[in-house]
Length: 196
Image 1 (cartoon, helix red, strand yellow):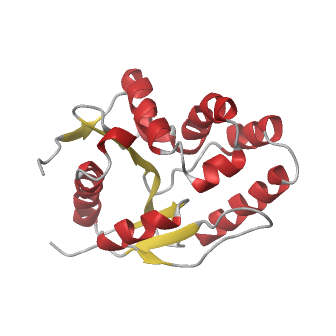
Image 2 (cartoon, rainbow, N blue to C red; image 1 turned 120 degrees about the vertical axis):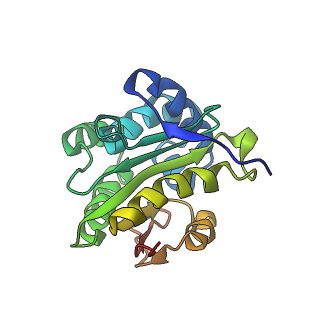
């Protein structure tokens, strides 16, 4: 398995990073619960990516592989999602009961964040045609090495139970499971920094 070269992506390159994330999440249980119709998912998921993780670009925390087969958006300590944009997206694109349920899921996700300073992995994904080739692991190691050097916690919410073992291999531990009404499970996880 070849090692992917990872680098920071600039805002003007974001459409290519978003394309990788869209293909990675096309079968994600939570995202398809929100938008079961393919056309709705394809129209709205890029807006979710931007609202939830778009601040990564301004903080030098958006990573891609050189070939854009994978992307990761991290929010540094003290930086959060665009809650106004997310609220508008949910209110204008979701029908009940999913709208009310997802707002409760988002509240519980927010309450699950560690009180200490932490990096938040908003999204990580690999183009479906390249999954299982080590691209995701390379992206994860790329940023976790920097986070470990800072001695700071890392945090994420897994929207797919199948990905929990991948995150565990990178040192993340499950905090809890969030499930509201008909929602699929969301699994908040935290990682203590490793000494170098």
